[in-house]
Amino acid sequence: MPNPTHTISLRRSLTNWLALGSIATAAFIVTVPLFLILGTVVYRGLGGLNLAFFTQIPKPVGEEGGGMANAIGGSLMLLGIASLIGVPLGIGSGVFLAEYGRNKFGNLVRFTADVLNGVPSIVIGITAYALVVVVQKHFSMLAGSVALGIMMIPTISRTTEEVLLLVPQSIREAALGLGIPKWRTILSVVLRTASAGIVTSIMLAFARIAGETAPLIFTTLGNQYWNTSLNQPTAALPLQIYAYAIMPYEQAHAQAWTGALVLISMIMITVILFRFIASRGAVKGAS
Amino acid sequence: MQIQPNPRISQASSSPEEAEKREPVPAAAEKLKVVPKSKVGARESILADGVFRGIVVLCALTILVVVGLIVYELITQSRLTMSKFGFRFLIKQVWDPVAEDFGALPFIYGTIVSSVLGLIIAVPLSVGTALFLTELCPRWLRGTLSLLVELLAAIPSVIYGLWAIFVLSPFLRVHIQPFLAKYFGWTGLFTGPKYGWGMLAAGIVIAIMILPIIASITREVVSAVPRVQREAALALGATKWEMLRVAVLRNARPGIFGAVILGLGRALGETMAVTMVIGNRAEIVKSLFAPGHTLASVIANEFSEAVGNVYTSALIEMGLVLFVITLVVNALAGLLVWSITRGMPSRSIA
Image (cartoon, rainbow over all chains, first blue to last red; front, side, top):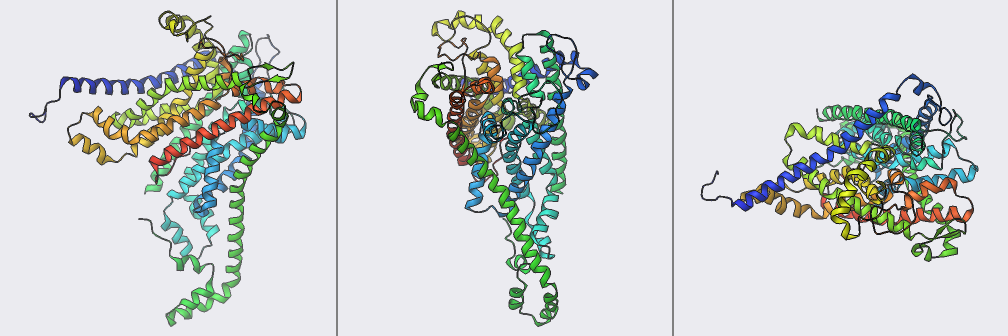
């Protein structure tokens, strides 16, 4: 004991170690499901991983082989179109919040973005259904893209606001002092300085929607074949995994696991890659 | 301290005339004679500034419009059942698509029970993780551990569902459920046939899925507690745990509560993984072994196959109920977290 006149009673010291021990145990337990899930996905999915998986479309139920080429392609197209909707709107509103949003309207937008962020994805799916499917009278890739695009907006806008606020005020003043108009200052100086952070926010949003299934079920519906038309139902990787998982066939389950492996790899690579970029960006901003 | 932008600098580009008026030094006024020449440019840049501002305001407006559209569509598309059943929709237990008679109670019950079950499991674990990461964790481990927790959040719902069907459910059926039935069967919560899947499995999957969000917000809230509070407690002779309890947890309590409520918001809307393991039966049963249904799972399950306007309308009204519940829960959580981290940048919850 550092202080001989004050010794801690056995009970207190025991409580201390018990409590700290359970805190550490909790942290350990939390990591267990991650390894279990990743381990199972790799273990069960690796077997079905071959070239055919990436080049062929699904075989009819019960037949061996086939792949998810159309689902992977469909997912990429969905994500691409969703980004066309979500990224500009997200960054634009983020710029608004950071540069013009110190007022009541800004607070309203901020609050609404948080509301939108908390809306369950299935409810956004219903909205996309009502907005696009009901109007078009059939399921389509467009409807799914709209749902996913909407989901990207709040994530990107709030993170963009955060990283723009990190850009020192003096940089803005320097640009304005050189006579550069405000819009040009924001585009060429502020946004460029914060670009690493903004890319991270896009990737976070991307990772979030890449695995979304719920809003796609009744918007893009799924498809056994290739589709590149905006107005037709489209296969998507998460949808295909879901469809195969609830089928009562061994082959379908194996395909689902392989699909899960591909999907999870895509997402994990994105997250880790852009965490790395973000950490480098932070170093750059500090210097 | 934040440096205020110099009003003269920011105005110089927008109104050269005013700058000229205020210019006190004659020598510098000489230089200002170039201003008339660049006046056209100045006017253009005012216009460009206005256009740019207009564009970003429009972007921001879309957020309001989207949320407005969500509310509008949910209400108008569920008019049919609203007028047919009124508020009885919320308390009826029937779910009969053939007779077009619908009630939401079993789904509301399932949503609440599975979410609360998820919270009961997730809260101690995630608060513990957050405390470990902020207060106890050695520096070398911190980055890795928080990355692992973050990755848990990156796993898609459908993969949790896949894992829950083929790994978690069989495990529960063989190992956990017999144990629970034997020792805790008297509570009535753990009786009946042991399928593996059902309410219990759904609760566990939800718990795993909301762990990262509760942990990350709790972590933020806990880091916001001033250092002096900890030092004061330690200086008074507190052990580390007593310090955490007295100085950290007590101060961060409203914020942690907010994190928990935010986790609840996520749990309520969780769809795919729940749909895949809860068993999809619209019944209110006390036993957690029994299959159930949630608001989100019934929409996911039946929406694309719903025939008839009343059926679709009933499902959309479920969506409306879910929207309202999550809205209230999230607003409450936001308020609580804000009360603690006020003044700090609130991280958007990804």
